[in-house]
Amino acid sequence: MDEGLRSELQKQGVFTTTLEDLYNWGRKNSVWPLGFGLACCAIEMIAASMSRWDLARFGAEVFRPSPRQADLMIVAGTVTKKMAPQVVRLYNQMPEPKYVIAMGACAISGGPFKQGYNVLKGIDRFIPVDVHIPGCPPRPEALLHAFMTLQEKIDQQQLTGANRPRHLNADKPSEFPVPEFGEHDLEPPNNRAVWKAPVLKR
Amino acid sequence: MLSLESIKAQVEQAIPGAKLAIVRNDAPSAQHSLLVDNASGLAVAAFLRDDPALRFDYASNVTGVDWPEMELTEKIKVKKMVEGVEKEVEEVKKTLRPGYLEAVYHLYSMELKHGPLVLRLRTENRTDKAHLPSLTPVWRGAEFQEREIFDLYGIVFAGHPDLRRILMWEGFKDFPMRKDYAEPDDYEYEPTPHDDVLERARQHYPAEGKG
Figure 1: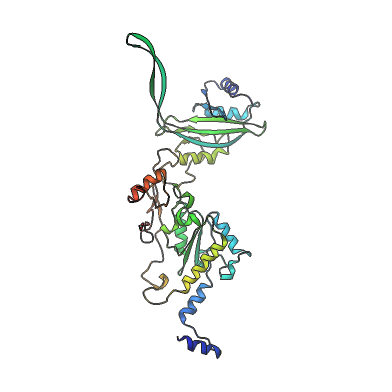
Figure 2: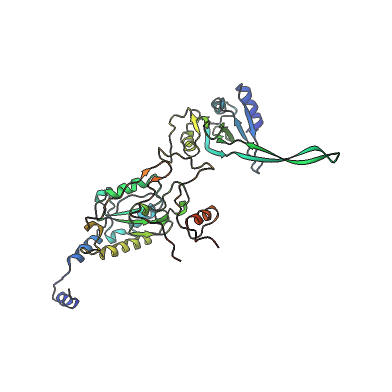
């Protein structure tokens, strides 16, 4: 819609918008996180939701106890290999559209436990992550920033066309394979459809 | 607390057939430990707990130690005929010490306020005879710690009420805290690799780490 016409109409008391803007505006301001934490980052996540940092300002005050009611998974803390299948399963149980914030050094890469035998080197090996936050643990402000970044991302989604989001594209998966416990490691150790080993550009 | 030597003498007197040895610790802490044979391990533990002069009623910490097979070298002086004259010559003697696993118990007495007494149990080898008597019947608090040792070192505790893996999952085959554990090959790029990480970085990113 023409911007000049829109502002002219606004002066007359007529507000116009597009369905896409309205849809994205509604969704970005009611992202309900799933209430679960894995380690110390969860304490910062809880602090961010309390009165001092007040995540409720962004429409995310209701941490849902059930994945069926949640839109956002905040992976807050170390994902051990023993816990990874349960995290993926929780993600699969969330209805589309769903988003993931990987919070903290452990969730994005394994962090200080990267060389250990029992810690997953980043949850992005199994599920698609929308926003990564570095930090050990990240400050609540960093979580707020990640949340605003996610809101911008939701706001820019197109409802039609080739770049439409996953939940509007019937061909794209909404569930991802849950790894199984193998004899030496998780089977498979990563999901090649989601994650690729980093390539160095020199 | 009584000296380790006198505790050893008391135990040997009370439990006939118990084979005890003192393992010296030459570090500044000088925390010597008592090595107990497996057959009388449980009886010795019960005696240490119940004897009125000892009363070690609290197992503060139980941990495992892996001793892989190792070549020990020591220099010994040997008398030899060198060019018709008898001389003392230093020779290097090499002995192969077989590998074994150990469980180490740190015992304290809450009642008499003394401790620690360090108790060691040693398996016969690291493979098929990695068995030890469980001391959980004596100190209930050892239950989860013995499970952890079973999980990470592979020591089988006979007489343990619930011997399952506690940290890793059921079906996991390796023992991650053993010296010869080879972790799955899932190296990921790191900006500042060093030591054995650098070695793995060279394998996975041959162009890296040459300089």
